[in-house]
Image 1 (cartoon, rainbow, N blue to C red):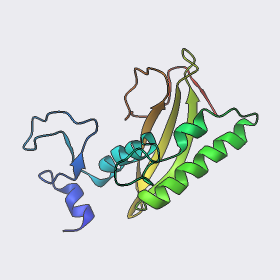
Image 2 (cartoon, rainbow, N blue to C red):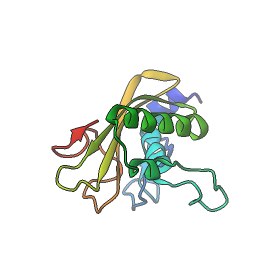
Image 3 (cartoon, rainbow, N blue to C red):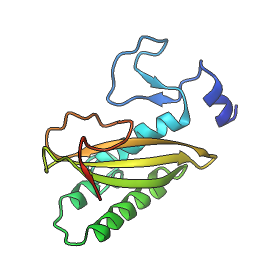
Length: 157
């Protein structure tokens, strides 16, 4: 069965939503039904995992967490460094995902929280895209997977 056929089949489940939570459907945990939806959870998982954190796969993850809290002078150079880090992580661990755009937002209410909003698509279907927002630092009220837009009232880089 092709990837597109699986995406169109409502009885096929691709992967798990994170964090794990009970499901009301035929699977035990909440599951994703399309590859693009699963790619959102995979992207957030990749970026929120620091390299060296995962047992038996010390190279899995991203150095993004460390990069986001470095001091910087040039906002545009910083944004380019973040995008380069994410692109390298995607090329290594999510080669089937296109990184179409990456934006960084700082929370105006808590400057210790940064949000990275990614626009992603799948290599086999680049015309369909989704946004995923990942938060870093502080005690954020935003979930790891968001619909986009970044922080409330936050300034973008």
